[in-house]
Length: 118
Image (cartoon, rainbow, N blue to C red; front, side):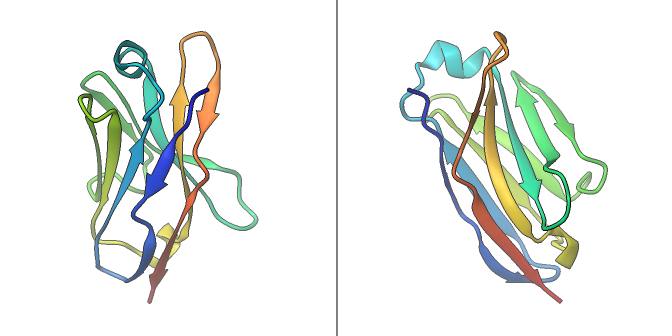
């Protein structure tokens, strides 16, 4: 069973930084490296939106976070990270880790709350 374990959310002032982590401890290495990992976020009244994704060395970012957020991965630890800098109040939401397999399956973490105060 695929399990994704997120950590690193919290409360931060606008302009501050946070780093989120998502570990996939039950995923074998070859599966972890051959599929896309991503971060999504959801805010009240809005649909879940893509924040950033990574596949191999290729990364993709949502327009609202480009230049401020960086996604990275450590294959040995089967973990991805989201470094969030210059945080804004509109970045507030629940951040979800996603593992998208090439067969179409999607797996989600439990979510971690990020709150940015103005």
